[in-house]
Length: 431
Ligand SMILES: Cc1ncc(COP(=O)(O)O)c(C=O)c1O
Image (cartoon, rainbow, N blue to C red; front, side):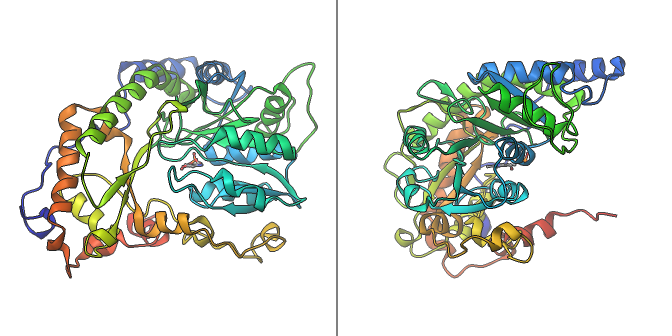
């Protein structure tokens, strides 16, 4: 069968489910905020932001939820609230969105990169202890794609070394580890509501915690330093304005109502998809960890093995799969310390200058540059036919992989681009 990238017919011509999903609930919520004339984030938290914090935390089994402007700020606020800053080291996975590490630098601390586990692409708990120094204060496990970092091992290490654990749950809304909600296992959790995420208001973020003093301090830091309650705890602090608007909170309250149903649908369709790929060679699936009792699939991630496919590289495979009508990506993340988006330069970040820079994390590098294929969650929000088409397209490209030998075009070159080059390509004129 001729591959679509070589002029054949694509497997899929109809679009998959569009994201974000919305209905009359979002529209009614927005109209009601508009009419209330109570639009902003002050007083903090404002009415809907407080209600969202309460419901979102309850959904994840945490005691407190503080809504903020985005999921980079939520990480940074927690680090500051936990008094982690200059001179401190924070362990972060080498394979994640740049923002996880940037938040550490913004808070004045130094990120220390640890490789990821090849079976989950999440922070490899077996490598954490050798990265701990007397300056280590915290660990930020990221529940990446559709998997969880090994929270049993991480909490045990953190207890032993008296370290703060901040779960980066930007991909894990509604996920559960041993029936505990994402963001309720460590000392705090951080969520993003950016457009692509499992719940979205375009932008937004959330801190979850069981520690009321930490929650108070996050509110204070997000609200220009104002104390959050009348008889308040926490320290006086210089704070930004990182408040969520009532418009965002109203949309997210509607999105939260759909989260469970969508999470279950994604899980069902991901299971069917896995079944249809049984016995396929050239790719492998990340094994399921039975401790994940509710799978939140922000992206479904699988591995591509060029060595068993005549050396055709991952980016060429991804370009060919896209041509078959499948939204997907390969270079979704890089090994963060090799980021093409920003330089970890000593002169730019004093905290970085003070730390070590000689990271070599082969699993993260292989995932970023050679192996991982990322499928967005909305593919799994449709029907069995959608995931059958997805599997058929993957199988078609694998079975006809020799058609890609020596082939090169603009789509493949784009697929090989660095994050910074792609940003330029996608950018609209700013002025
Ligand atoms: C793992 C991870 N952490 C943090 C963030 C930051 O979230 P935001 O884009 O809302 O600042 C993201 C979002 O892209 C993410 O994927």
